[in-house]
Amino acid sequence: MNREAAVFIADGHGVVGNAIKNRLHAQGFKKVITGDSSVLNVAARVEALFAQSAPLYVFLIGDKSGGIRANQNFPVDLMRDNLLAVCHVMESARQRRVEKLLYLASSCAYPKFCEQPMRVEALMTGKLEPTNEAYATAKLAGLALCQAYRQQFEMDFISAIPANIFGPGDDFSAEDSHVVGALIRRMHEAKLHSVPEVVIWGTGSPRREFIFADDLADACIFLMGSWDEREAINIGVGRDWSIRELAEIIREVVGYQGKLTFDSTRPDGMPAKLLDSSRLRELGWQPSTNIKDGLRATYAWYLKNLDSGVGGGDARAVV
Image (cartoon, rainbow, N blue to C red; front, side, top):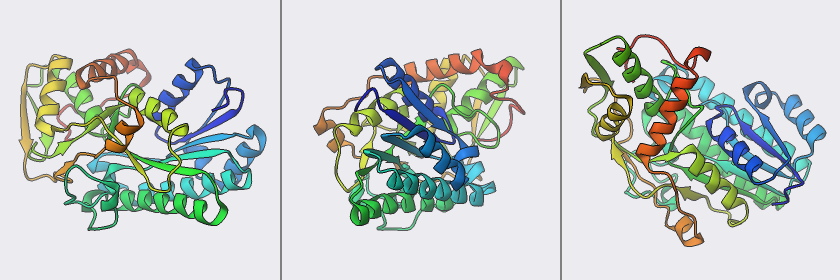
């Protein structure tokens, strides 16, 4: 990548985009432009941004995302806004003939009962998990559109599928957060207010693979110079944890001494989501942050930014 060229990061959620921006700045890139939901949802604003900044490289992270609760309450928002972002950014990138675009999909795009670890060949071979079907469908459409631009216009558009993402700048709200942000916020509040019990949705048995945002940013930049294939590539750390195991690690990091109770009447989501990232390993990339260190950094960021309203609400609220 040419460090003198402009780079556009399209990320309505922010955690991955901020990590990529910081890493690019550290590597000497001077012209890094970001776009959030206020830009991505409107074609004219995306077109104007491309016309003004003329980016040579694009990281298309997508728009809104969220955990099970957000997917149940806002399926239209999650599907529509991600479809709009993909269409607007890819078309502007084509019109401006960018040198390369990386589209980031989601591991929820795999079938609900996918063989583990999940290989890209398994995409579109089975039914999606109902609790995030709308969001997953939008991500699948993004993968297909990326390949279509390669086929019809010979654009160098590549795509990747990351594990569950967490890190500084994450969403810690009651409505929209993923499991890591939700558990950190709720255990902190429970510790602060001496709440004796935190109730967590589901049985605690589903298994998830988690990747720290800084590691994902490093992998995305690495792929810009190392991946030119039509098919997507998985970005994972090579192991998974049950939600129960994750909750215990977060309890240790936060210092919460109360009881963790799992509400089995609530949905679990997909039973397992472990990615086969062997292709990425063969290219020479490895993650550098273990889960406990990543969670410590995430919790430290949360504490530092509490006054800015990064979280709040009832400590008993479910994940």
